[in-house]
Image 1 (tube, helix red, strand yellow):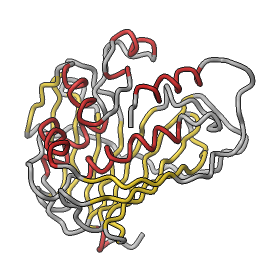
Image 2 (cartoon, rainbow, N blue to C red):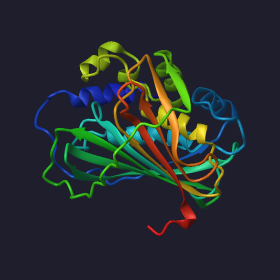
Image 3 (cartoon, rainbow, N blue to C red):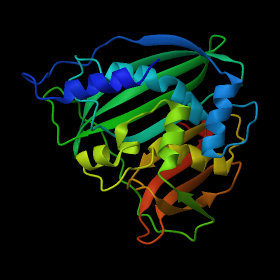
Length: 284
């Protein structure tokens, strides 16, 4: 699916033309079968630093569903503008490994809107099946800052733990070209990641790194080898490009359940906080 027309549609939707919509979210589900092609997957792994194995990085499953998510969010009946929404959380439950060559049957729909202390959120819900069995379930949460809707449902917000910057185990030098490289690998051509002018238009002094790039690179560094797991991601302070950031595992160890972070080396503030937990051991 071509993404640039969707962004153009989203820009037009964001213009103040007529009364703002306040109705419910569209109730439709988009379904599409997508093959895991080796060449496209190799392009993704080379950008995020993942090994080119047979088991697919769950960040790539997010990439497969991303065009369908944007198609739903850009729908004129969605009462919030897609452009300017902030990706604040992500959760992927990996129920079984997805492998190169598999065909993933994606089912994508919206949930919400929900109340948030900073505005209103919408969840994009994705279920991916392989051969009729659920392989992954994803919840992606987007925030429309400063926007309120009368029909927004209450939602509990987990308090973020105090972050104390650890000693970095790796330093990542991130140059602006990474925005272009990840866009080509993922299809996410949001202009705030590619154009300084567009970034400034949304309040950023420079282009910012894709959040899912940082999150996917983090997970690749941890190299999880659990048979099933939950991958939780919280996006905090955006990474301005160019930057050098720190990475560290703050709890647990590589290949297993762990907490890990990408953070600002000078100020000690988190950019991306991630946690992997064994799904079969969870009770929620």
